[in-house]
Image (cartoon, rainbow, N blue to C red; front, side):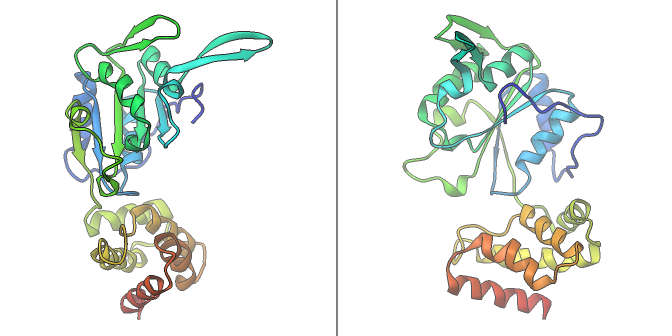
Amino acid sequence: MNALSPERTGAEAPFYRPVAQEVALFEAAHANGLPLLLKGPTGCGKTRFVEHMAARLNRPLYTVACHDDLSAADLIGRYLLRGGATEWVDGPLTRAVREGAICYLDEVIEARKDVTVVLHPLTDNRRTLMIDRTGEELVAPPAFMLVASYNPGYQNILKRLKPSTRQRFLSITFGFPDAVTETAVVARESGLDAARVVPLVRLAGHIRALSGMDLEEGVSTRLLIYAATLIAGGMPIDRALQAAVIEPLTDEPDVAQALRDVIASVYG
């Protein structure tokens, strides 16, 4: 997102259906100035949960999609040339600290190692952010909250969240919701009748059982919503599932055929 344009809260929080005590834990973390780490597979609702909670708590939200080239300067800010003059421009983390907003680092494990060094003082009793380039030391106001997420299933030797970082956060493990909840969520988000969503969710369960064998990861709730949206719009089921399930999950012809076989077993 644009560092100068946080996602503002609206009158209604984005739809999210709790599956455990995650709402209460988020509210407690925010009330006590504690950072929160969300762990779980791709597309299981981590980002939507943060958006929901930011609106629920009426706080601006800065979301940063972390990647290999994301540096500490991208979060803190840098000097830029504007109109012939050099001026300092805050990054999203700095803006969030100044405004008492929520800063969400999505897939934090993808960021460069210097990012975690910057985060450490914000995740202990100091709650400070040092801006070396300007000499400022910002103390986070009570309303500021740092939230991060990552997918433990994609960890490897080169990309692993260090225990020294992980133990600075409260943590919640997210998984895919139970069939009843997932059916309600997919129906609500796609507009497809719940009765027609039921076989989609059943299909997802079968595919997730293959995860770790032929697939790196099972089908996400997000992809189910995409498929249901296409079906609700009139697209034939086989074409919708090809575009929203098979193609996103694999490039391997034999695995794609295995997925078609699973689909055939569910839909007949």
